[in-house]
Amino acid sequence: MSAEQQAPPLGQNVSSTLNSPDTSRPKSQNASKPFVKSAGDENHKPDGPRERPQSAPHPQGEPGNGGIDGIVLRRAKTTELKERFAEAKHKITTKAKTKPAGGYDPIPLPDAPQGYTVKFTFHKATNLPVADFHTHSADPFILATLTADLPRRHKEEPVLTHRTPTIRRTTEPVWENEWVVANVPASGFTLKCRLFDEDWPDHDDRLGNVTIQIPHVDENWEGLGPNGQEFEVKKRSGSKRAYFFKAIAKTFTHGGSMTPILHLGMEVLGKSDPPHAQMYTVGPTSWVKHFSPMIGRLTGVKVNKDEQDDASSSAQADDHKLTKYEYVLSCS
Image 1 (spheres, one colour):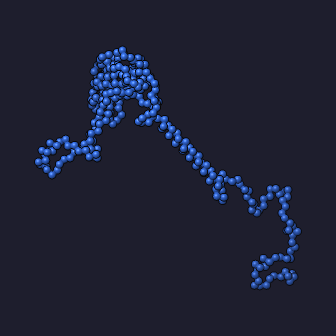
Image 2 (cartoon, helix red, strand yellow; image 1 turned 180 degrees about the vertical axis):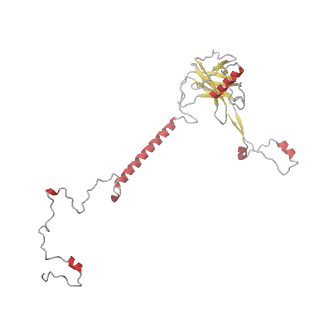
Image 3 (cartoon, rainbow, N blue to C red; image 1 turned 90 degrees about the horizontal axis):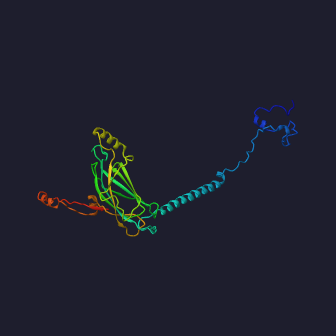
């Protein structure tokens, strides 16, 4: 071993020896040449890190560039939603404008020939079923609708209706209620009478209906005669529960009919006054009075009906005077 290859003396740093270049070994001939991939090295995978290929940009934008594409897309969606909202609002507004508004209507009435004024009289009904089992009776009333072949100003115009008063706790009601209608056309009309049992606050029970069709009306029409006519009530649309118990009751009484009878009257009063394009109710006009102490208290209306009684009792209690508030509301 030569002097250059001798071991380092004691105390010398071994790491400096390892890090120092070894000049004794000859350099490789391929050390300075670049790496060239040969044909046989197709499946060779280098050990070093590889450069990742650039992926396609995300449609919502990369966070690195501020998300410009995402902002544009969100703005487009917001604009689309605003357009849809404006379109829906326009449809609602247009639909609301097509309905007839209250008060004055500038649309003229359609042309129609002169009609007639007809009076309908709802006399009475018999043999109605028991609808209220706790009272073994019923609270019947009639809801009548009148339709005719007349042009309408609006498609949403309601059908002409009339309601009779309610007769309490009876299955043989007598109404003697009149309904006068003007501009009934000469081509006739259809009157449908629905009988109900009033159950407040629950829903009303149906007791049946009667439909009368009149093909022609003129001044010489006799109507249904001076005393009216009787019509059988159709039970198909009535309350099945009421007619079921009525059938059971009839089996124990051994006789009688299951069909109720409605007594009606009609007569022509003459030709109607213009305009002639729409049927309307002439009368009678009904009024309802509502006594409300609370509204009287709010409005300051003072009423003391028992003033004399209060004066006699004031001898015993002079310090306290009773003040009553009352408000009467009348509706037609």
